[in-house]
Each structure stands twice: as structure tokens, then as C-alpha cells.
Image (cartoon, rainbow, N blue to C red; front, side, top):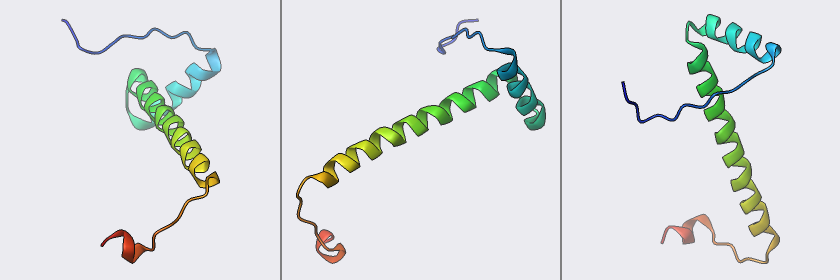
Length: 73
């Protein structure tokens, strides 16, 4: 059956497999679903870090700030 999802094959150390199996059993989920959820969380964390880098860079520059009241006028 065709799918729109991309298949990625990973080889993981035994310790990682044990951890994934433990989480899958705890959550009554499949190993693939657990791995996908953790991968999504890691990508969100990576994105948050990139956004934080942008914020930190912008804060270094001299900038004028608006008060909350003025920002919504």
C-alpha cells in the first residue's frame, strides 16, 4: 500500500532500543510511534534553540523599545 510518509531506517545501540521498548511498553504504543514522537520533540527543541539564538542576536543591537500600551495602538 503506498504511503506519503518517508521511511527512515535507523540502526541504534542496544541501550537506545531498550529505552525505546520500555517507553513503548509504558505508553502501550509501538516502537515506531515512540521514536517518531521523540524525534518530533527533538526537532522542536532544536527549533526553539534557533529562535532563541535569533532573539539573543537582536537583543545585542541597540534598539528602541515600545511600551505595551504603545505597541497596541
